[in-house]
Amino acid sequence: MALRTPLGSRVVARNRTRRRNTPPRSRPLKFLFVVGGVMSGVGKGVASASIALLLEARGIRTTALKIDPYINVDAGTMNPTEHGEVFVLADGMETDQDMGNYERFLNRNLSRANYMTTGSIYLSVIEKERNLAYGGRNVEVVPDIPLEVIHRIRRAAELDGAEVAVVEIGGTVGEYQNILFLEAIRMLKIEEPDNVGVVLVSYLPVPSTIGEMKTKPTQYAARTLNSAGVFADIILARAPRPIDAKRREKIARACSVPPQRVISAPDVANIYEVPLNFEREHLTDELCLLLGLQRRCRPTADLTPWRAFVRRSKRAKETLRIAVVGKYFHSGDFVLADVYLSVLEAIKFSAWQKGVRPELEYVSTIPFEQGTSLATLDAFDAIVVPGGFGSRGIEGTLKVVSYARTRKIPYLGLCYGMQLMVIEYARNVAGLKGAHTTEINPHTPHPVVMVLPEQEALLKRQQFGGTMRLGEYPAILKAGTIAAEAYFGSRGRRQRRDENEQQLLITERHRHRYEVNPEYVRPLEEAGLVFSGVSPDGRLMEIAELPREVHPFMVGTQFHPEFRARPLAPHPLFTAFIQVAYERRRHAA
Ligand code: GLN
Image (cartoon, rainbow, N blue to C red; front, side, top):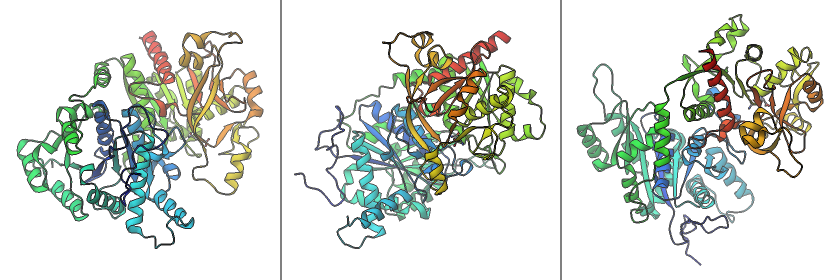
């Protein structure tokens, strides 16, 4: 049996889910921690995702984890204006939006093992203690919390068959909240100095009054990190522009890093260029040297598909104006586009694939409730109504849905956007006056959207956290519909299918509590609405749409297709939507 150190090394890849090209037992897991200095919002998530992509492009299986410092056990209970988008993994975990970036860059699904928060870590330590897993000893914040962090990183790497774990630590160094994660790095580094690397993502401001790039905040950030017993091996110098030789030297000297490990990381218009810039700066060579992987990795990266994708994104000239309609836009005077991040990215991937450049505009629905004319929507080629919760702005959104339907503007409704499409149709076409979702009006005469009994029980007990219908569920599509054609092409187009033919089965990620009320399915269908995607048991309506003869593209999904859209694999529904918007625009021109 292999010897185990107190921090559990030599446990890499010993399990059943090991993949073919995973490291043999003797190869230790390499840890690459990504920490932030100076301030948040400088792209630590994109940097981590890019690093993971670059290592994979050198043939090294890499997984990416996010550790968030808050007490919330997952991101599901947080208000979007507080937190940004809640990303949902295939297994139903509600996470920070950085997990979305990791999946998009790595082009594969990650699991709940790749995400943790202070709350979830404490919860499992306490549960273990209650189960006597610590054998009766005193369980302490240090070392037991950092040990749990390390244990979880190893487990995530093992499940993903990874040789390197890129671990992004939320927040900024110097915050009280993430000190225990820095302690995990320190402890690990003592025991495995050759297997641990630290990347500091810092920021170099250029004050407009002097126009000079300043290094001092980065020097302070490096020292703050040092005071936690952790030393940066590589510094990513995020800044409005590339760093010059003089400042590179200065940072190298002050922060005890060789100059070639100070990596220039200027602002970019398109985040997908970041890995290409890093590669140009020889970041991957340095990372491989740092982690002792130079003999394992390919000498050059295979970034061919990624480069082609970035080229496509730049080549797109013709524009398409798309309204993203919602309410979570403002934080003080600031417009928060982050809340719908995956939706925006999903639109971009499909548009770029078609060679068009999407111009995305955030349209708040509140003014429509106060009498602003909906005619402003005529300027758009398409309308997207993403997911949401609660009553604010909803009557305004319903007006937008109505406008899109009657003016035949291509419409894509996601989750709430589908429920509102059903409500609008019930009220204005099916003649069900006052139809609503019980989320907003529990006493509506026509609860066309409602909670199912199992969800009602949870709500009564106030069990809100992690109890929505979350993650992947299958749906069966109706042949001949817009949805079936989008997903299955000519196979989905055929109106009649012979009995032996395979079902048109899809799997998509969900995050909702309310459902189309089964009792209203018949009357809605009789009024012309088509439920083109239904759960295999026939009980849950997954996609609603209008027939092509009535509207060029009016489709709503109870699930969130945006979570599955990838740069190298755009989502078929978004692609179909963009295609129709594009054709309509061409026609009008
Ligand atoms: N509020 C709706 C529900 O809970 C929609 C949720 C969403 O859009 N993600 O069902």
